[in-house]
Length: 128
Image (tube, rainbow, N blue to C red; front, side, top):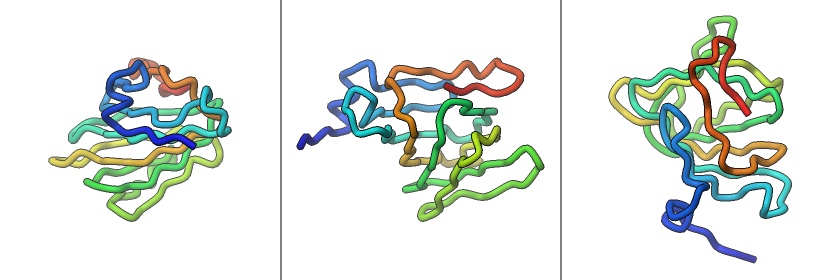
């Protein structure tokens, strides 16, 4: 068993500025659990085109607000208590709230190494 805090992660390379916010990579591949857990902040007013070709991801909102948009133009508001699931390696837009950061618990399978960063200049979406 082990316990790890956000402040512990902030002292390591597993505290990542991912392009439109921050990610505390609380659990990574090196931990041997078979998945990654992140505390993810999506900054207010940001929009990111993301596409995880190598990972499935589920995001549970714990605070703030924002939205996710699929490539068919369906927009889903995200608020505390909502989960969105990218179960088909879905390319999507992720947006922070107009005036409020979106705070998520993000789960990746297979696990991240922990130091990955987005390149939000990619035309087809950034992903790992």
